Image (cartoon, rainbow, N blue to C red; front, side):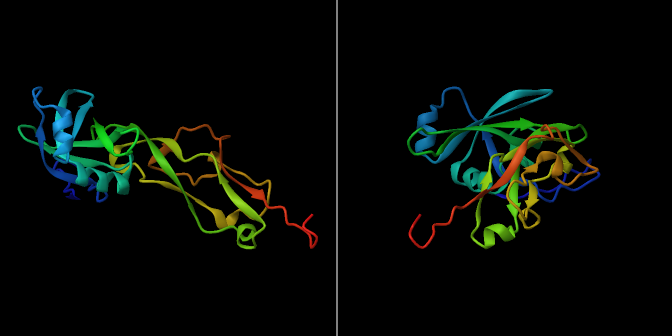
Length: 206
């Protein structure tokens, strides 16, 4: 897995894209159970004006990439017999016991058209209330729906917890920083995170 190069026809380079390198198509005769035993992950590529393509990729390379980029960062797929495809990891399926990824879907995109993705919400900094041990963080929203051109899609959006200074002060989606290149479509009145007070026991344990 390597960083991707930008297609020559695109005006902007997406430095945060990743490439899986050589990826091969998967024949209908190949049993997915056999592929998985060989450390190969079966996957499907689909999208607007793209016929579904069954592919197989290195399981470890996929796991490492997904852990880093999630579903909001472009990846380059170099599939034998096809032009390079820019895509987002759309969905994954996990084994019910081992929780290993057993299948993945890639959604191919046009770099010149807006698309939507669920972008992770990260928490940065620390509230002074939490630092004093008077509260704990209660995050209830972990991703927001974002509309943007693929090259403008943020890998994540952050909440600065150092600005949350009191109990009863939830952070809403509408409090997220605005951007000129992408739009957050999740309703603004959705709560992302709040602080829950910690009851301190007195000397007698009451």
